[in-house]
Image (tube, rainbow, N blue to C red; front, side, top):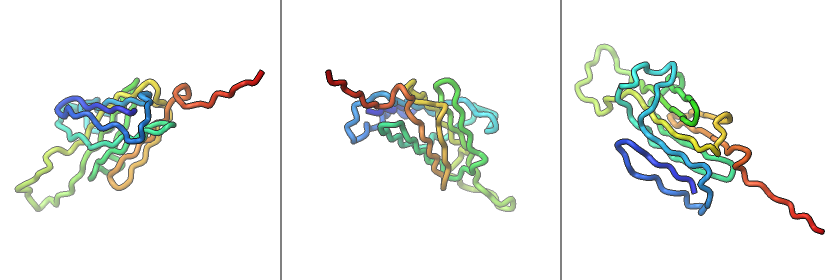
Length: 155
């Protein structure tokens, strides 16, 4: 069973997958606090929005989907350091210079999320795609965590 826990202001645990998997091998925990990746906003003290994330586990690894609408590809940063995966994106909302904003519901222009990866995931082989504001990360299980078939010898 894949477990994802959130820490910080949102203390609600995520639901386990419905497939009945008994593996706890690809556990991922998440928090909204995280290090600022190089090339992104330099001040890590800036308030940031926590992007909603779905984590799906299968026999060969996990797939993570993070919704980050309004973030252009060149303002998205991914970093793996040790067992920490940091996702950060700067939101760009074009406002014409001759118009003054009198009301805005989005006052934060940064998405930030940090995940602690299980030792059974292979962080060296993470694949990332970003389309229409959705970041898709595929994190395979390490070779020692992959299911394998054992042959039986007859005497």
